[in-house]
Image 1: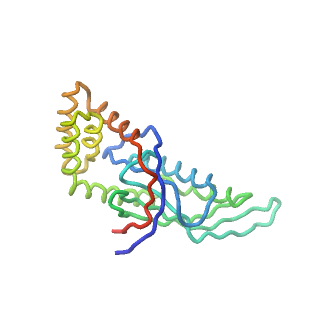
Image 2: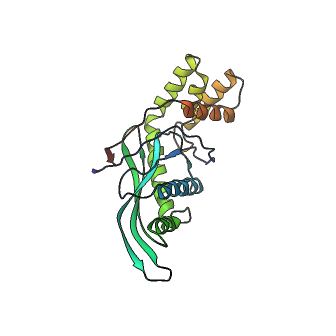
Image 3: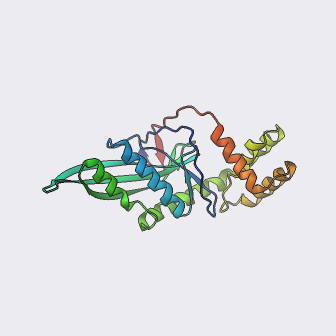
Length: 236
């Protein structure tokens, strides 16, 4: 078993999310390790990941989620092209990870060799990120591997989420119950059972499964969470 060091923080952020067939959500987490890069570069990477992950078959957002996608730059070096205008060339490796925050595990990783040209190092790095897109076969394969591991996780643990939903419902915590009941992805063996529970609780509160899911996500966004640091995770 290989071990990695990944460090990031999360806060409470709201983002309208697309829907996919599985319903799996990934939290796009900022880079907090590897080569130091300008904030604009980190922001652009997060935005590209949001777009590419949604297009590649999962749901991505910046709100808290158990499963995350993040990255770091490594082995970054520059060279100068004589002008006019003088331009900077950046060569770097971007390593992306999909993993589980709660259980401190990495489910998938992929390295991308990037090259960008610009009038500054920052601009060159920004231009280098054009490779991160759903049309990149390596990226799509990376997302699919992560998705398979997340579904495997739910296959083993879906009863825990359903029990949490049932308990919340018994305590009159409707939104919390909806949140846990609607987390089970469609590819999971517990999906049918989860849908029955969602339907039952929805009827109890005279609402629809679609509204139930939206209500659960809203509840999750409103939770006050501590600033979290993950400094050591296992790569399975």
